[in-house]
Amino acid sequence: MVTEKLNKSVITSDGILHILSSIDLIIKSGESIAIVGESGSGKSTLISLLAGLDTPTSGSISLNGKSLTAMNEDGRAAMRNQLIGFVFQSFQLLQGLTALENVMLPLELSGDKNANASATALLDRVGLSHRLSHTPQKLSGGEQQRVALARAFVTRPSILFADEPTGNLDSKTGAYIIDLLFELNQENNTTLILVTHDQTLAARCQRIIKLDAGRIVAVTSNEKA
Image (cartoon, rainbow, N blue to C red):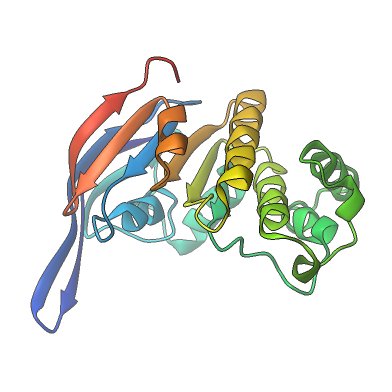
């Protein structure tokens, strides 16, 4: 994934607000990246642009040699379905579906006839084989995040975006989720792009990109990551 001179601005009652300015990034396949910075620094906006959920004011984003910024919404949606997985702080599970049904859903939408078997296997992988028929309301926060991880990885995405994946979890559960996230990442050679305030999580990534006022102010490599 490559971005060049990426900018995002919005018009407010006080004038133009520059959210991101001149973001240049090269993210290699299989790399793990942590995006850090204070609240309001532009982290969530950047991840939305990289995932094709939002469009920049100017600049370009390319993924697998294809320009995301040149695509219309249908094109970006198709790219997301083919290549991208998401994990959110708020889990975003469908409350009326069981754990198994939540994980099966992206496979069913793509017409995968092995959706049940694949989802069951991945839920077993994250330690939830005994919770397949439980709806989110009957699961703890950590269990819901494990379901969300299984749903994100079940399509074997090339890139996984995670926005504060441990933000709503206690430290012990958060540590378990971090371990699981990187185990699945290594097994699938998935590119990880994480927004986090969690220093432990950031330290596990190969690079840390720090934003301040919408600009990249530091890039740190973790040799042990």
